[in-house]
Image: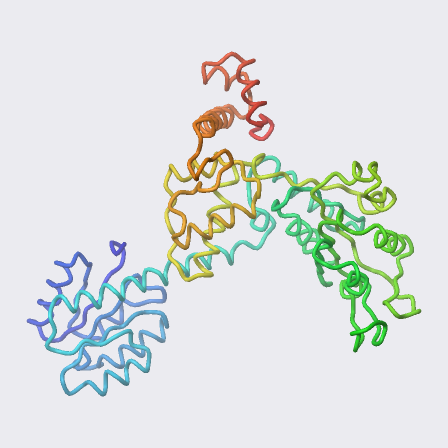
Length: 447
């Protein structure tokens, strides 16, 4: 881990300087020695890949001044000060000013290397986190917000940009965890309503008695507990966007009220007779076919046609497996920055497991796995796959994984041409098509 990190060692006594250099080198650490603080300071810059170990008493600039100048360049730089017996008070003061640690003379080689190694560990982590945060900061366009390069996700991004400025209501259709709210936010942020507020409401998470108050707002005294006026989501999102997730769970009685608001573009707070204008775009999210639900009389068809002027499908993760490595890396970077952890390395075997999983929880499940992986709680990327017994994948599950991986690699190499993939795999075309159908693999995802 320290092969790219360096120790700048400042000591004016030639014998002590030589002893320190030898101790660091025997400890497997890279070191560059200096006789003066001025020479060492010229090597420093923000983000310097290493640490500083310096004697306090030096000719010219002393170690404390070097500390101050080094921290002015890079506040996160670990600086270790070496003190004589009479310099303890000075060293304690330096610790208050930001020194990483101090070592009192005489010291053993083992102690010197141990303290330096701890400082290098800290510097390594700090630099990794800074790199992760920089990578995240540069992801400010739609390709970075909705990650992936599969054909399905490219079509989704283009559809969002095409629809962002339209005021038509949009129905976002996708399985649990596919990122429906992210799509809704993107429709808002890349459109002309981006200056307004984005409000999100999960229809399944609110009791029916509170739903009207949450959506339309209420006046003080309109019901027990309404001690003051409350602004509802529609009013809060005026000029912006209101996202109604899990719209299929909305009770029928409330569907009638929402339909009326959408038709008349007006609403009333609960307990008020004053009509207020509605000026927000409605984006609804659902994981079921609302039209089929309406045919079963479980959802109003007139509300469906109001909400679903445009239906925007979000592909499940299993239909965009090529995006898994990029998404996983993104979530690991986020987790490392959030939890102050180093960015772990994913092995080829673990990546293979990620690519083979069915991902019923989609991107949300992948994010959960990435966070546990970053925290060191996931030594194998696949602890919860379908078809396991007592935590161990069955033979059928493992064979399916292996077959899927080989077929998808062949399709990827042949740009989705199944006939060419069959030839590469040495299979009759009908056999390949049968396997693709059984495993739920579409050649269109690789074109």
